[in-house]
Image (cartoon, rainbow, N blue to C red; front, side):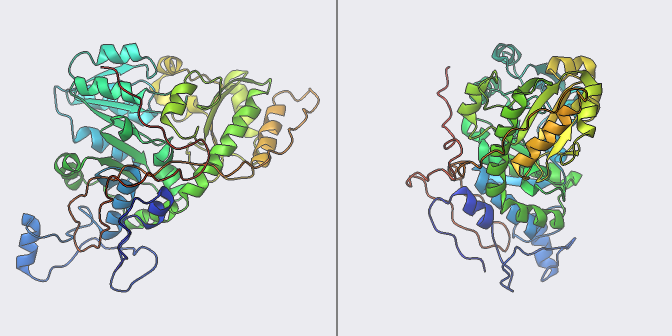
Length: 465
């Protein structure tokens, strides 16, 4: 049996290691890996009662699995959500969160700045089912006001956006969406639950690709959908149960292990990303640098109002378009060329020819993605080695020029914060055959920030009606 956790708010680092923990009769230390497709019953009567919903018992791993249940509870505690359901991939999470809620005749309002596959769902798939869609520029509040001046069923957005790191004013857009009758689905992959809590600003549903920072070591795929228990149980769960985008117990177990170090990995990546953004901004070969916490980011104030740190992604343009971008990427000696992100290894992506190829050149132009745009996912290598690698690759763009002086190695910064503990979620219905910690009581003393990177996450700004 797992210990009953203390009846007081727990900090994110503890939740990442202990949240949702349960043990089998063998009292194992690590989470048990239940590699089973099905489960047996004591009797035919118990099987009938299980399918009638009269007793709680695992039935089939497509519906639920003990290993998966542990991850769902851990993420719900971390996010401050009432409930969570896992999916096989991040895109399965986005798809399930939308298709479970929508029906023919509904209208969706979406940020134009979406990951390529998310953009395809809204622009191509939903209209096939008679669902109207409308795109808006994510940073233009007037466009949001116009689009949400008439009824809508769902709003989809990501902030910061992929790959241009644009911000959406979460509090303002959530208010507009709710007045229009819509739920708000936020893709929070770039920020992670340690840097941004969209539900604090009014979001209804949060989706993740756990492939990214949560696993964070390039091993497995996985997705998560979080929201209120009633919506998860009555809207999302029947869709997942009957369409089958379930997460394998093995992938679940790997993600559980990855979460145990997220509070150590992410601050280090944020510190390196901030230093690299500053370095790139000084290079003549670079036309622009985008990083949410830099003073020259057009939405820096909003980023600091919503996020605890700038994140692990840096986007920049090299002068010379696609040819120069390819030469730069091919000259990298440490950083890998890949379309993934949030990994312990630093990765460089050319969005125009990979992740955002199929949104088309016209839509890329609206998003600000040029042929010289590069998205850099900063990993856990020594930041001085990364700076040297980037400098050498930039030097290769002007081989006739004398070598540029390398910057001095970046001194390590003080250990950073990520986030204060979230508001405790409402206690959900007990899962079958589990020992669960009691819901955290409200009214306890405020838990201090996890680390000291940029202070704890601020409260949602006051909303104007």
